[in-house]
Amino acid sequence: MLWLAFGLPSGSEWFWIFVVVFLLFGAKKLPELARGVGKALGEFHKAREDFEREIHHSLRDPGAGVPSSMDQASSPPSAATPPPNGVIPREEKKPS
Image (cartoon, rainbow, N blue to C red; front, side, top):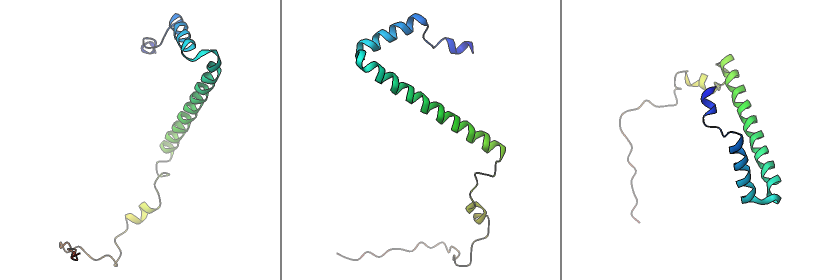
């Protein structure tokens, strides 16, 4: 976890970041900005939890994500499909 500490701002750096944000957005926009950041972080955490839950679910039951159409793909082709003959039909163009 020590490697995480090298890229994060320390206490005094957070202060200067806050001062710059305060000067850029002003006192009236700061609560709205904080609310937006909070909502974005909440959505991020929710998406991360959903992703982790999906990964854990797929690890517990590997066949759960396979659709039933995959079962049909393993069956032999039906008689309605003609075998390929190696000839590609050519479209005739009508003169306009």
